[in-house]
Every structure is written in C-alpha cells, then in structure tokens.
Image (cartoon, rainbow, N blue to C red; front, side, top):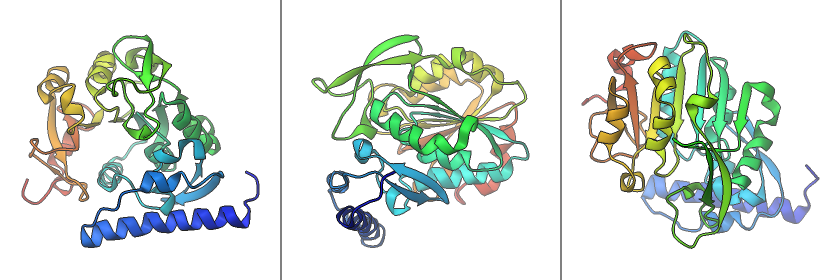
Length: 296
C-alpha cells in the first residue's frame, strides 16, 4: 500500500471515530445513527486495520461492505461469541466453510485460530471478493477462495450487485439493480474432505440459504457439519424453516440470540439459526449447557 497523505489519514481517523460513536450511541443509549455507508464513501485510500488481532485491508471499492469492522467492532458479535464457544469445545482441528463470505469478517478471524485447519470461502460479488482476497493474502493455502455463488444448479447467473448496500446483494435483489454474471457452484462438487474432519458451515446469502444447503446434500449427509444460517425478514421471503428441516432431517434447530451468542428455542424471532446434527462430531453440543441461555 502507498503511504497515506495527511488528508487521507485525517479522513480515515474521522471515519473510524464516527463508527465508534455510532456503536456507542446504539449500545448505550439505543440511538441508531444512519450514515455508516455514506461515511465509508469519504475514504478514497486503501488502508489496513486490526480486528480481533487480525489484519484486514480496506479497499474503497468495497467500502460499504465493512460495516463497523474498521473501528474494531464486530458486525455480528453473537456469531463470533458462538463460534468461539464451539471451538473451545472442539478437541480436533476443524474446517470452516463460509458461504457468502463478503470481505472476510469470519474468514480471516477463523483462519487465524490454531484449531481451524482450513477455511473455504465463497463470495460472488466482484468488489467484495477482491477485498476478501486482499485480506486473505497472508494466510496462503490455509484459505481456499472461490469467486462464486453457491446454489443447487451449477452454471452462471445474473447477480444483482446492490452498490448502495453490497452486503445485502443476492439473487433475490430488487428489479432494476445493476447485475453481473457470476459463476455458481454446488457444494457437493466443490468440497472434498476426509470423512473424519469436523466441519462448521456459516451461510449468509440473503435468501439463498436453502439452495446452498440443497447443493450440499451429500456432503452434509456424510460429514454432519454444524451449520449456522441466516433466517430473518429477508430470507423468510424465499424459504421457510420447514423447507430447511426437510433437507436437514437429523438436525435440531436453535435460535442464536442477538448479542449474547447463546442458543434458545424461540424460532419465531430469529436472525441466525444454528442447526446441530443428531449424529457425528457435533452431536453432543446439544448437551453442552454452556452454549444455551439460562431459560432454554
């Protein structure tokens, strides 16, 4: 990266302070400030920042995908807490599969952990993939990057790129948005791992979660991964939890509580859902009371 000018450094400093202020006002006073995306547009220079002791590269072309990360603040603290707890429970190295990896909030942090042997990352948005690749460069072959969407039919599809909100881009995007042609792969065709390797899957693809799970029916049946998938107001428009249950017949489903990172049984009001298999490496997580809320 080139040396930053005084003006560039000042803009970056103000931008990161704005992110911290926004977070403080929301967390302490429940005041939500708009404009994080607009503030990111001020930044015209590439720079590096640290999040969870990992170095990330900020690329202006993908500015609106970073959220709070440049201020060292997680966008989904509950998911980080849950994954940390799961890794603490594991005694063996695991493989982490991130479908809808964006700029790499989870790819980079998971790859930095000793208990994670390999990370597979799938991201179709051209700009966010470039940013992901920039931050992943130092991990070498530990991170296997795929510039592709994941779906139940291999080929190519038009992908709405949602310039104003790239983290919300997906195949269910609004009519009239700019689109690019992206490759679509199936998990069963792409992932080939030994049977005894424990796998954690994170799926966040704005309504495409069912299709991604269907694309890995054999892989999931054979490997029995622990699965965290998004199920919120957006994804509910494209599939139901019952459709996911039909694909994951031997799994139990739990809500991942916002902020706490604990599990409960309230599946009526969810952002992320955790699916724990009935067999295989992760089955005994159901009996690990430390993962559950007190009232579960």
